[in-house]
Length: 224
Image (cartoon, rainbow, N blue to C red; front, side, top):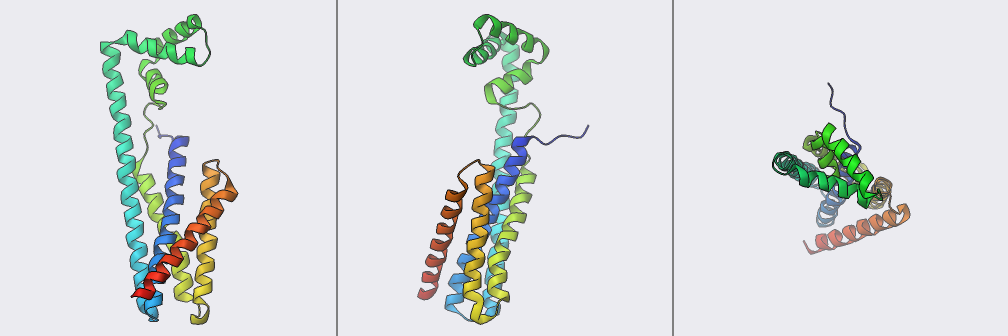
């Protein structure tokens, strides 16, 4: 039977993609600005930006893989722990399920009946859902998160790299700045939509961070 992807896993993959894209944009533009201020050699600027784009993409992918793998290991450990507890202390597990429903507003008597019924039919699935808010067998996929970060960081970094490398020399600075502001504004919008946050605030925050990043790295380039 084909394994279905849970909503939480899909959201986690999207989150990794949005964060990867944002990091790709900011890290690449940081290197581009530092190098472009220090030298006017277009090939040098391009190679520096491309190298940073690849390094950022693989770094983000590796970080997401490690993070989600750790989460998956923790979820599996929780399942193993509950399996053991069901054998050694079933009464305590039953009580935990009952308390869960009482805290939801169900009367103790009804909660006891619900707990007994659920624990008779699907004990492990019930305690995992009640105690950890997990769905049995649906673990986060570290490869999905890693691939999402890899692709999105690469795509995000392409915006400033293309603007700086392909634009006519007299327009490369304003077009690169515009590309960065538009792209970080877009990632701010997407992150707010995914997290049910304030869209306007997220966009403004990302744009401010982008501006600060460009100023800092431009200043570093002047020192080289």
